[in-house]
Image (tube, rainbow, N blue to C red; front, side, top):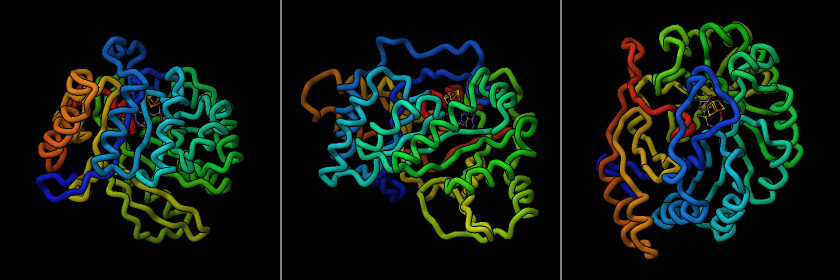
Amino acid sequence: MIDRFGRSISYLRLSVTDRCDLRCTYCMPQRMRFLPKPEVLSLDELDRVASAFIRLGVRKLRLTGGEPLVRRDVMVLVERLGRHLASGALDELTMTTNGTRLTEFAPALAGAGVRRINVSLDHLDPATYARITRGGDVGQVIAGIDAAMAAGISIKLNAVALRDDNADHLVELAQWAHARGAELSVIEVMPLGAVEANRIDQYLPLTEVRAKFAERWTLTDMVRSTGGPARYVRTNEGGTIGFITPLTHNFCGGCNRVRLDCTGQLFLCLGNDADADLRAPLRASDDDALLDAAIAEAITRKPEKHFFDHGVKAPAVARHMSRTGG
Ligand code: SAM
Ligand code: SF4
């Protein structure tokens, strides 16, 4: 699948639910309105649409949410999708999770062929973690990370850089990750969906974060292309740190991804409303011809770049990150 800017679309992020067992303050409001259940695709439908993307050229599939591990019977889907790894049609099946249920699911995920998982962890202090996530238990997440590593899954930690909550903690978080053989990626908060806090107050530019890391380590830029907004450095102690800066445009030219929410709505760019409904063609017939045509048509409309601006108070995009996942 090649879009009109010559970009090859080889990466699908599939949100299997928009529901979550946490309520991170930067992600969603306390009283979140979730998508209506009848609109949510069944596991069979998610498998069918993901398999269509793989047939059309997707080589990397990331399951996300909401929290993917709260979707009932999600392992049925993961195990089924594992067939595409076995056949060689898919290079990688990964997941982004908050880690609260990893102790339970890590062995089965490894068994299905999942080799790498991103775990979101913004703070190691139990009280601060509970405040950021509105009730999460960091001990449970750490136990989940240990369980995943014991199952042979490599872990990348994702932390959102938050001016008031973890600006002074990210060096410690990186040290903690590196001591366990994990990478840490730091993410700039994006203006996606309304939350109680003011986004401008939450926003901590990664230039400041990088400067703090540079006080602790000598950082060397790494050459690693992911087709995404991440840039990586290696510390003089051998640890890897990623900087995910979606607010700058410099990566859109190499963007290789699209996102599907759990109702079958395809988003062509994280920072843009361009979308396509895949549920109607999916449900219109058992044959995949309509679905394939809808995907092909949508790819021709992938926007050139996104527009985020923390200078305006309204969210750049009304939908929350929990709908499309990360
Ligand atoms: N629940 C899973 C988790 O937390 O990893 C998967 C979905 S979550 C929406 C995916 C990632 O998006 C997490 O790393 C989270 O920290 C990040 N995220 C959520 N809201 C964000 C925002 N407004 N700006 C930047 N990152 C955000
Ligand atoms: Fe849930 Fe992930 Fe959003 Fe936190 S960031 S509320 S864990 S979906």
